[in-house]
Image (cartoon, rainbow, N blue to C red; front, side, top):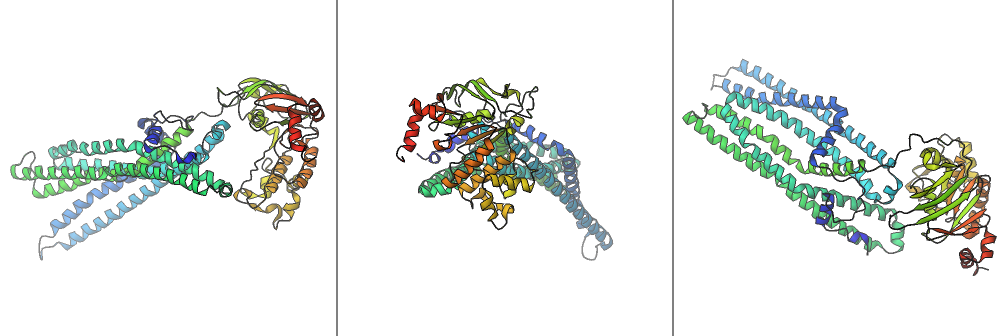
Amino acid sequence: MNPYTSAGSVSTVTASAAGATGRNDTVSSLAPPMSGTDLLRRLIVLIRPRAGLTILALLSALTAVSLALFVPILIGQGIDIIIGAGQVNFTQLMSLLFELAAVVCLVALAQWIQGITLSRLAYGTTCDLRIAVSEKIGRMPLSFIDSHPHGDLMSRVVNDVDLVGDGLLQGLTQLFTGVATIVGTLLFMLSISVPMAVIVVLVTPLSVLAAWLIARLSDRSFAAQQAILGQLGAHVEEYVGNQRLVSAFAFGDRAQAGFNTINAELYDAGEHAQFLSSLSNPGTRFINNLIFAIVAGIGCISVITGKPAVLTVGGVQVFLSYANQYTRPFNEITSVITQIQTALASARRVFSLLDAKEEDPDHASAIEITAPQGRVDLNHVDFSYVKDRPLLQDICVHASAGQRIALVGPTGCGKTTLINLLLRFYEVDAGEILLDGQDIRGLTRRSLRTSFGMVLQDSWLFEGTIHDNIAYGRPGATREEVQEAARRAHADGFINALPEGFDTLIIDDGSSFSQGQRQLLCIARVMLTDPAILLLDEATSSIDTRTELQVQAAFDELMRGRTSFVVAHRLSTIQDADMILVMHEGNIIECGTHEELLARGGFYADLYEAQFASTE
């Protein structure tokens, strides 16, 4: 079954996004979702370093709103000046018009300052948040990266952080302008009629209550929408990154079917979330119009009876104008409630990643190893990825400095896992691994890993020049050193044949190069670092036979005097190893040289016979 065609119903994903149990997601090791109060507290902490911008934005909002509230007064005074035909005081009217123009210009200037300030605040905070998320991923253990969809992590770093920034910009804009408008209009209403102002204030919470109830109903739907969006990103990343295999196996229709399924679930979740949130604005507008009608009715009664306040018809009109402005911020906030809720859902996803458990830091007493000799000992090592499924069991290996150790065995027997343990990508469950007699848990990870040079079966190149890719482990290497490393890796031939040579730009993971050429560049990268210990995991598996012979000769030169661990399925590449460890189901079942193992006639001899008997 295609795993992407059974992503779960909207209700299931909603429950997962809201922190409910019942769904065994791969993101379970992320921190649990936080409450709304904690989320708002985290957002406040996030913008606290830019408190100056926040204060300036608030002051500019207060200035803009305060000046805007004087506009109706100036207009009213102007109307009073126009008494009738031939009775207009043009001198006083022109003075009021100049005052009105000045106020309008000042309002525009204050609003411009507010917009610029809030943009810097929101997108500066977004920049800091994206840096924090990126650095967080760099501090996460490899087990976390291996167990989480890469597309979902990318969605959190890119999409979710952007949505948080947009929500901050819209939310803070409406918050600052709304608060200033509410406070200003309330003061003006109190100056006109205290009883009428009290009535408006007492009825307005109905609008807030309606918006709050609708927001509570739609919150889970927005969380589900963002969770499914992460699934969609993981699906697209996987199939776009492996399009050749998708096409080769005619998997396109099934991949599209999986995409359509997740996309349909995203549509359902989004439609549900948008529908619920869209009720907020008309709901609050209805209540605010109801408030307007109530105030108008009470105002008319006041004009006729003088109760509950003595008002003129003009006074009622002014009061209604300010009452309308008083309720407007509630409408404006609900008009962007969808964007704000999406931002809050994204913020939860980002903060759950930021709060996830990091790789245990180096112990305070950890030491730097500066000149490793290369002696490696594994003493009774146990390890398992899943607690109830043991993998490596009682592994004992003793490699002297300069010794060449080969690891062979069927797929899944633990060869690559052993390499991961040497580099402390994973920690052993029991036993110990020693480097020059020192437990590697007592060494800093940086110094430990720089002692190793690793070439994997899957080559990795980044966007940059060939020179930069080879010099990845030694950024300060000279051009001559890079060229020498390429020559020793037998990569200089095809590099010099390129129009720009070592300055050729590599894009899209080097897809324009053959797999063998990409592997040669990775081998040159390790040769340049000149490590004390080599880890070669199927390093020549993607290279043709003729090139393999050349590279093998280069490896022989590189491995001379250095401890080497070679994982290989091609037994022809490890026949000269000082020791061959034969692994099966997490155990070392045979150990010896090539000749000794053949003479023993055991598992290794069967592997060798299976590979070479037909050729012979």
